[in-house]
Length: 60
Image (cartoon, rainbow, N blue to C red):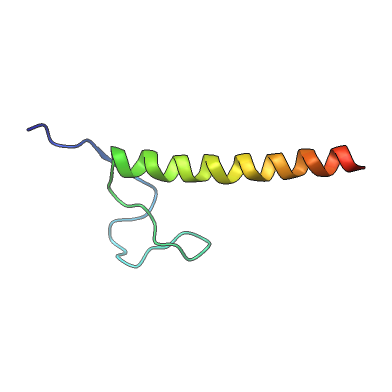
């Protein structure tokens, strides 16, 4: 069985309570699957935001 690749992230490993600016716990030493899942969530949020901005511009 192949071990999952570990992706180092900006949170410092010396600080166990390191959190992102919005209060969500930072991804520290995330596996590739967790890293992709987080990126997918951000992409979905951005898509929704851009869709709403485009709709707002069309209404102006």
